[in-house]
Length: 166
Image 1 (cartoon, rainbow, N blue to C red):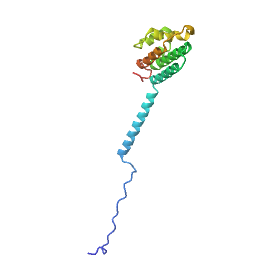
Image 2 (image 1 turned 45 degrees about the vertical axis):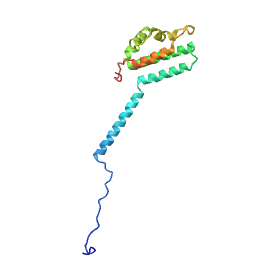
Image 3 (image 1 turned 60 degrees about the vertical axis):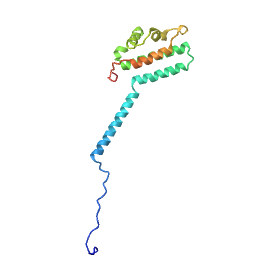
Image 4 (image 1 turned 90 degrees about the horizontal axis):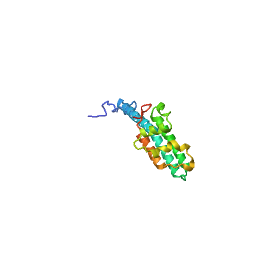
């Protein structure tokens, strides 16, 4: 049989399948990836901006500044004041402000002792007396004070204003 006589048409192949529009499964996968990345960014930002982490970074700066200083009574007094301010700011961010803002002097020391496992009088007493004590009689154990501050920041059981810390 002669095939040239037959009136056959060429084979027409279908058009290649395009990527667009995407199938529903791809849309779901894309949405899932966006949600996971968004949650990861939110968690990382929350982790980096937490009051405890910030306080520990500032405390490390105070420690470095003191270690590189000449350790004179003025340097000691400045470190005590900075530690006291840092503890107060951290407490204000972790506990209800109405309870913390009014604390000073011995009440502040009692609060710190109450929320710490290892508060000794000779370590925390400079927090009350330090800013007002004469420089010639000023003597504080700054490394122990910084260690106490670090432990207090890590151990403080916060009754958070916004429910972040539990």
